[in-house]
Length: 509
Image (cartoon, rainbow, N blue to C red; front, side, top):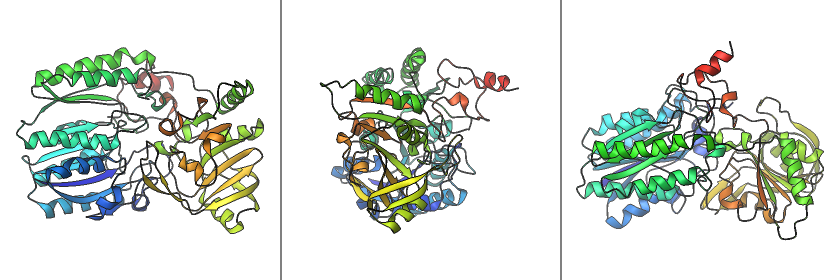
């Protein structure tokens, strides 16, 4: 069979300060940079990317795989019109040149908002469908944080979402997508689809599939797929930082019959709704989190070793933040933390000054704090430059899975007992290599602060003495009800068991 495929990924935080332009996709921001044509094979080979898993699964069947574009940009504010139209144009041009084809596979995120299109993926799927017609198979894969829309569900024949957060199954999702496509090639009738929206937003910090309640919900999803009348079931927990009407969690099923698909959706959706009160936990501020970490260490539990890991959840570049706020860094210094390390502080201007000074120098910097996050400011101090780096290294942990990282001019700075990984380009700190490339061995630290929400767990759980979450300034809130929403459905609950959007709006007037 002839299969043309493309990847176009972006997770959009409409509250974030900086948009994603075309250069952001060229750079990648922790992902491989934009590639086109046969270069795609080498760019993503062996990595934890859905399209890589799709290629791996399809190759033994001898299908002709025709690559178009694969690209992603670090999460941010909306994708610019110019970037969206340029990349979508490439994809459509390549599909048109390849016709006739038997199938199109799109490796998408599901939470892309462009400046001129609320539903970036739905818009792309509709354009592709108009080009290939109703008979050519169109399948797509999605992030667990997709804000899955009706346009996506109605346009593609099959949609397959990740089942893990941290996303250690991205490549596996590509393999699952191909397996369904092969069944369609082998004569299985096109499945029918049922879906249901969940009536509340889910803060990302409580979406971890290694923990309850999400762990049980995804186990239930897998059980439902044992029904021979069911082709596939997905549950996307949504990305609660995209201000448009279809933001939020969705359950869907593809079945041999409408009745079977609807039955599976109803069972899983009800399980999610029943679990609503359990999607919660403690979120201390930075001062409390650092104090708690130091108390854990001072208890001197001889049976335990390794660092206390603190997740700086609200300045996570994986959620569209700038990875430059200094709230928790200030607390580490103020409370006299020793053998502490923090990453990443993304500040290209500071990185340029540090590289000009060189290793061993002491440089006065106004570090970080440039993103305009409320309550944040640069931390002005004299920093010791322990080492400098070009920022290029490989990250082989379970999340990144072999990505070739490029953080731009980077360094390890020291301020009192705290070492800081300084970078020029954004990427979520989800791999121990992101400390090691500047000489910091994560397991040897007392406290590690990671600019991440949950993906860090994939590579840090095994070395952590304890894991704490904290809230400090950033472009996303772990309490969605505190964000300045404008366009949500009136009956959508802003947090599990929380007020509806209409109630929240009424309380402001």
